[in-house]
Length: 439
Ligand code: MV4
Image (tube, rainbow, N blue to C red; front, side):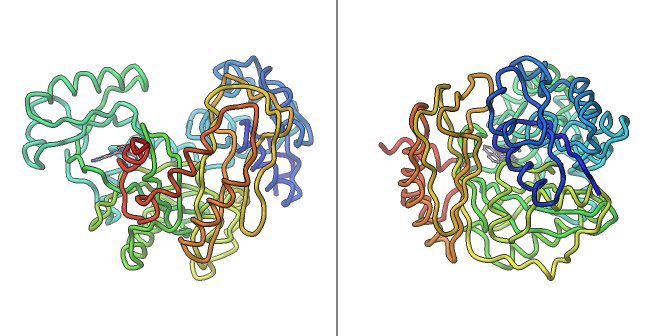
């Protein structure tokens, strides 16, 4: 088993990983940038090592410094957290090359799934429905036009090395295809050093649902149900929930079981997510996220499984310790992301509590939120026996939440959760724009 773990991250996820380490009896070593000396994860860890200046490219993204810290700290494993290097195959390989355990999928799995064209083909072979489009990558405008006419406009051009919305272009008519491909290709080349594109039928206002999976790396996998992440704007998720209010049990079972088959085929190790688009009738495979996600707590709340612990155990070569039959999904869980739109000093902090309320945060009274990093400062997660109860509990918890000194989106979250659109459960990825317009 792992004795000492380096957490190559900051903020709430670093705190989250430290908590699971404590429960497992693993020592936690934090890393921090010069801007994060007073951060909560540094205080909570058994030991903390500075890995560079405030600029994350020279600290939290600096592979050499992170590996050196892990070695100097006497660690035997590294957890990448979310964002930063969490889906970077080269980092995972460098960790293993240094003789350390990477808490995540094998480096080869990360790079294999990083190619969205390869991932889509593999999903199709495993029997998952995929969005109609180009059969593989599109090499030129003529080939793309052929596929676009087959599936009908609008279509969407995506980067093979992309994901999460980068390098995508919606094309509404034939005359735009060539120019959009040029822009998307250029964007992809700049961002990922890979201009390879593929094409899909564009679905208007779909639901974004994703299945949470765990694999033991030996061909066994289980799912923890799905999450609905449709409440987003510009690919920034604001609210996530489980189960999805738009899916019935039959669809959920089919989607989740076929997801397990894909992970078993990949002999996937650790935690991962399969993203789908759902149009109310059919679900379509989109891509695999080979990492833990920000919204993982809603799956923990409905399943009772500590996903970070399962990840650590899996990476250490242990069995999952449970099968699909042991996992009972109960009730409904909602997460609201609390963002600070500007840096500042937290002058007052009183997080909500009570039954089935969870706050994952790195804030404390007097903490100075630095300007350099992600704006998310807390996640408020609730569980209820029903979706209705979870909604009432979330509104109660948002009301209790007292946070002063930094401007937050708590009031916006109250508006979203109390909106008739959210309450109805019938919404897709364009709902948030509508809700925010209604003043
Ligand atoms: C799509 C789509 C509609 N049709 N693909 C955005 C993130 C990236 N993973 C893929 N995305 C989309 N792909 C087809 N064929 C709409 C989106 C999309 C979206 C997906 C999930 C969550 C939020 C989204 C917001 C806008 C667009």
